[in-house]
Amino acid sequence: MDTHDIFGDRAQKYRQAGLEPHWFSTTIGQEDSAIQRADVALAIQKEEAAELATRGHRNILSLPYIEPCVRPFQATTTQRPLTFGYLGSGNDWNVRSMQAFTAKLRQVGSQFAHPMVVAGGICKHIPDMPGLIKLGFVKELHTFYDAIDIAINPMVGGTGLKIKTVEPLSYGKPVLTTPPAHKA
Image 1: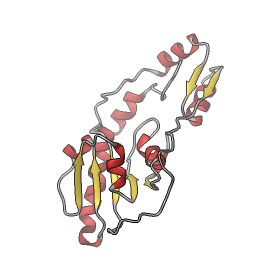
Image 2: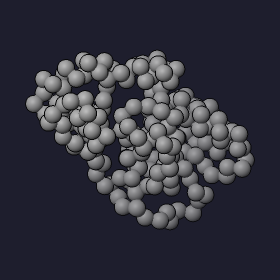
Image 3: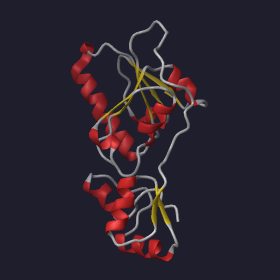
């Protein structure tokens, strides 16, 4: 069984954050029951494999999520200001995180002199502001990653692996994150 993420009590985590759960969730007991019926369960994060093992499950294998290297890290040769970027869907956690981040940017105002490129469904959920460039949906990921120097992931919470932290690395882009953006 591929667990993908831990789904036990995920809805409760959403409610604790003041969000209405829109993603699959189950109770820990239901999740445990399903895993007990499997010969082997795969976890994409070692922390989740450890949590399942502490809940008494056997045959938990960690099969990490790995993005293939699209291109190596290299210095930007484009003559432009240092450009930051965020690529994400319009899911609740992304919306809450980017609204908090753009609110901080508005507080800083003209002191933050770097363009911010935003792409994906999140564009519909954040206000226009000076220095913010909304690309909307991009057909090819390299279109977004070619337009930025540093990816950001200012998550304020959530569950599971943050692909928007891992993916930029495969495109040779460094990533700045908040603590919740690099934890399960």
